[in-house]
Length: 132
Image (cartoon, rainbow, N blue to C red):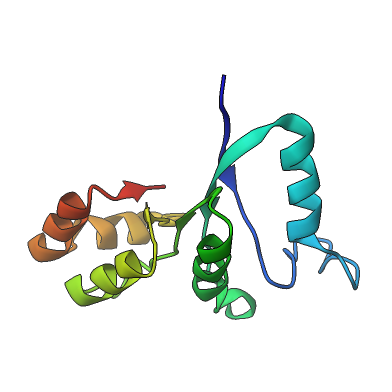
């Protein structure tokens, strides 16, 4: 039976959690590739995140990786405010986005998402975009 990883993150310089950045020379992608081969993971839903300045180019990183690694199904990050335009959604789709990641940690972000224009929501539906 094919195996997929339904939620993973890949950052160009690794993820900096509460204990700080990863060690210098940490090859996050290489480590994941080893895990993927070991466990037989054929596809991965890669969740983008640009909610902090240090991750601001994560969408470009994920879309570039997906262009050379067919196992990657990228979901670039979208801020909820201001809402993305139809043109932004189409551009990301043309670059390989299978859908989009949204972060709604507080009520304010949830309200902002609920206020997205109909044209934006219609485009997401037309794309049959996955949302995470």
